[in-house]
Length: 195
Length: 197
Image (cartoon, rainbow over all chains, first blue to last red; front, side, top):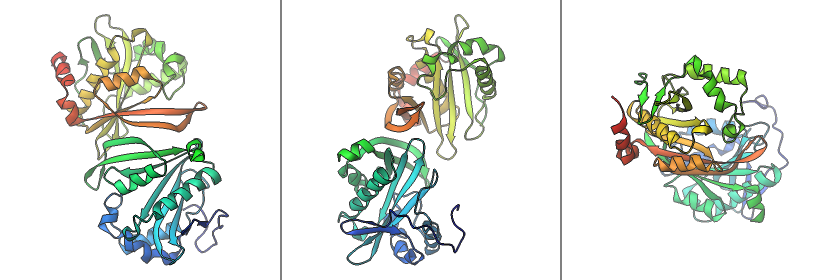
């Protein structure tokens, strides 16, 4: 990792945390390992992801990285946030924004939520907030997201919030030994402002 | 991977590796602004064309991912080099390749690019065992889009404003075909009949 030496304080971004109607989107802390492991260890969560189910150890390593993934300094940087319920304080998922191109101002959004909290609109709420961050605060021109074509909850969410399907790739990758079919959804800054 | 059996003959064309004395024929279309309009390089001068030709002369086999096989497309009757077609091995495990082609505008609208692209795709599937071959083109480049669709490739992506190119927002189409789809296609059998063993 670029950034600070171990043990030194990270600069807190003035844009974080993001408070939505029911959620707080905040940087990860070392104390989040168990809450994240609770859903990342599940086969039904990993099914449509590039990574398989995570052990607690892999989870701890991932979170160690995420603690510093809180701002954009150069291409490839990611902001990864924990989605926490305001009412209960539970961590129910994670959401990320990756700076894919500095010159073309492109970003990629990703999200993973605990299945126990699906169908309650939490993921949409978080994605909308992150799109606003990307377009309004980080001046991105286009934000896209990818998902497995069988992952209906994920792409329906993107359709609901006004993203357009731009790609349907057939067997373009092998993921853990299986052919992968993928959708790409995108939204432009001009479209989001009209939203 | 074993280098393919080259050259390949189609009904009207010969696909072969590049040679040093192809310079003038390559220069004739690489230097044209109208040719580079939809490509990701600018119109080339003599020095750039020389470098491009040197690079293409070395692109004669696909040994590892990232390698490109570049073929000069020659008109069999008059022996003129009319364009080029290439396959780039894109992904090691998923056996993906990208097809690209550039033709001299003087020889357009006679189906040569389609004939060469068809031969290159067949080569990719039969000789190299690719699983999927894709091709990209600018959304305004209707000629290329029509050609790729006509070959039986599927439009898989239409990106809007996904990149800035020479100061303008780019709109890109992405076409693809899988090996099993290609082998079922009547176009291939038509091609196979013309291929000289």
